[in-house]
Image (cartoon, rainbow, N blue to C red; front, top):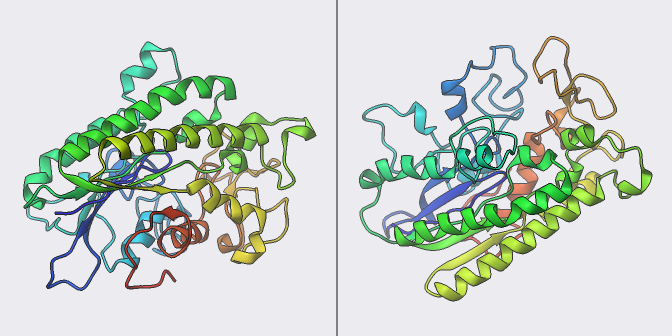
Amino acid sequence: MKMIIFFTITLTCVFFGNVSNANPLPYESIFNFGDSISDTGNADKTHPPFPSNSPYGSTYFKHPAGRFSDGRLIIDFIAEAYGLPFLPAYLNLTKDQDIKKGVNFAFAGATALDFEYFIRNGVDKPATDKSLSIQLGWFKKIKPTICKSKKGEIGGNDVIAHLSYRNVTELRELVPPMVEAITNATITLIEEGAVELAVPGNFPIGCISGVLTLVNSTQKDDYDQFGCLIGYNTFIEYYNGQLKHAIETLRQKHPQVKIMYFDYYNDAKRLFQTPQQYGFTSDKNEIIKACCGASGTYNVNVNIACGSPATTVCPDPSKVINWDGAHFTEAAYKQIAKGLVEGPFVKPSLESPPFKIA
């Protein structure tokens, strides 16, 4: 089976399996690894589920669907574009369930680095120990039932969302071990037979309402013309640069493997720069606020989660980018997915999708 993996914010690895001659679709399966940016129900399985009246999932599913947004995620849009079903969460699988079209191993709060790293280094512990290595272990358990050959594609990983809230200098110190963890995971998957990889960089975290709230800088010079934190976006540019350097090294060592880079940074940043072009509000103050939150400059209160009685939801989530302070709206994820599948933000590009993202 030919596969691709990519790690997203946080971390998402996706395998795209190439199809047989009898199947007209470009890929026959997707296997995804990550955190809340792509989790479709694993965390929901082990934590108290969202209440039935929660705003999560309200736009598309009309009820909570294990996703940390008002609707579909990037991985959902990618699956739809390639004619595949939404990925079932690994922890929700039943004994005889058909998983040949894909499985989602992503777990909200997951990190690229193992849980023990944070303990050893005195860094704030992540919300879960379901790191990339744990998710890879889950994949290996089911691989015999889905892989008939050892061909594959593979991808990379983004910076873990909760680490984005730390001091920029401290974050730079964490980049080498994170990039190393991604590189090692990539090598492992190549050894498993991967022949194509897609490795995304990270989002412009300086534009995320939760980060803006936590930093809460009163210095005008800390912000760009779009209201985003310059220092934090500069850090992401540094991280992405280091990641791309690691990717190039991997390409040289494994010339038989096609490694794609997913430019999440510029794909998402354009939405904040020219929001009206993509159907969002042109109000610069509103575009960086969270849709679901509890007042404040960015409608974020770190002690009051979206869906709590004290929070409100904006009238039209499709007009804003930030959903709950840490995640984007379905509308934003849709535009990002289009930039990857149909646009210029993957080099070299994915296979042409049989369906438009709509």
